[in-house]
Image (cartoon, rainbow, N blue to C red; front, side, top):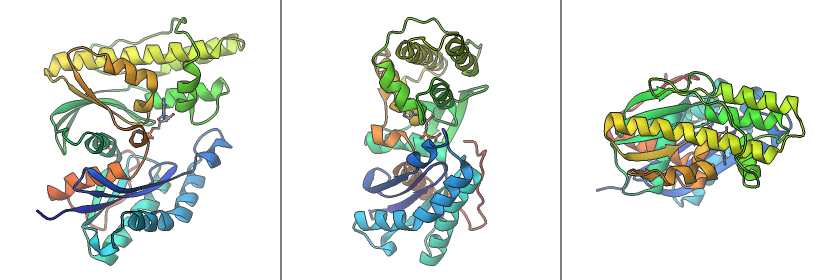
Length: 326
Ligand code: KG4
């Protein structure tokens, strides 16, 4: 069978990324230009600044991806672009570039859902992984439990009712003065702390989550006592969040009788959460390589590949969808 090369393009937030992936599983190049240093100055992503920087970077990033993969533009079989969810102005840059390239090269455009991309990061890391399985999606914008029935057949079993878990990490880090992006900073500091602070946990009858309560509790604790041991606070936060995520996946396993689990999204890079999931009994847990947890285009190329081989081709009227669901 002929090898299939997909160019992935990702610009949904503050990373401009392009990648070539062979047959959905093998990375030939994975270029990520992160704007973290720029947005750190403002304590978070400034959408307009993100869009402007994507415009400055996109052309070079795509060229680098092609060069590093040691292929020619014409070897590409399809152009997979994130079209949502994300920041509309940021999405539009990668999508417009991808559409232009698809038109110029006369290769199919594959509009790709960013959340599907995070799931597909696991296909690259684990070459033998195949659906069906359950996914704990934990990113900056989403927290969900998803039943992946097939490569492009999904059912959301539970979701956050308010903040995404990554959002809670980022806001807490900002308030207690750790800066942006909060997740990695909390991860590091928590290693020096003890989980000795009791924090509120939510329980719902279904598989939903809520993280605004714990976020507010921590912010209030800190404001009442700015001398509080921040490492302990971070460790206690991670422990409570991990317990909530694990409790819900256990319920999902019971409900679906599926015990193959994947982690996905930026927060799945968290060392404490990874460890807790690995000790889950009676389940086989897969997680992406650290470099594939946060935003990148290899995961978009992989998800795009599975859409491409099942004939899910987009046309050039495709628009950015900031609130795109699975
Ligand atoms: O998946 P992602 O790159 O972007 C979205 O698609 O939303 O996730 C970004 C989120 C941010 O909230 C960031 O703080 C968090 O992932 N994150 C982490 C870690 N690395 C990134 N959270 C906890 N621990 C980490 N090591």
